[in-house]
Amino acid sequence: MPQSFAAMYAHLVWSTKNRTPSMRPAWASRLHEYIGGIVAGRGGVLLVAGGMPDHIHLLVSLGREWSLADLLRDVKAGSSKSVHDEFPEDAGFSWQNGYAAFSVSASNLDAVKRYIREQRKHHETMSFQGELRKLLRKHGLTWDERYVWD
Picture 1 (cartoon, helix red, strand yellow):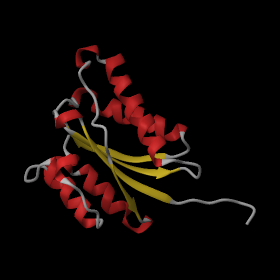
Picture 2 (spheres, one colour):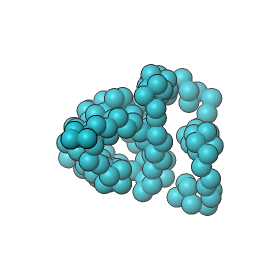
Picture 3 (cartoon, one colour):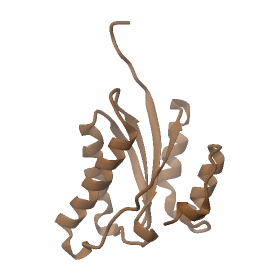
């Protein structure tokens, strides 16, 4: 086939360092826009971003030539630097080291978008830790509690 096509979608989730509620509503939407620029620079599209003060969710359409680890490294480092540069009073803001990434089928994009947009409602009854455990179980992943939360 002389032409290449790709339709790959990922739901990405990670926390602020030590799950500190340090993502401020005053700049969260600007942070999401900045992240969208990083994703676009790697040939992808940020479809939706959301979360809570202690964690973030992204739904991205990945470019044809991508490395998930490289994308996450660039998004986390670049967005953290952006917060430090634009909001020096939040110089303590940082992301945790790890992340969770889940594949999403094209037929499930609307449901995942809705899930990400409804984070505030969702977290009225569930913590980030509970949510992540539920997502890991749903996707058939196993984990060791000793290493997930540090």
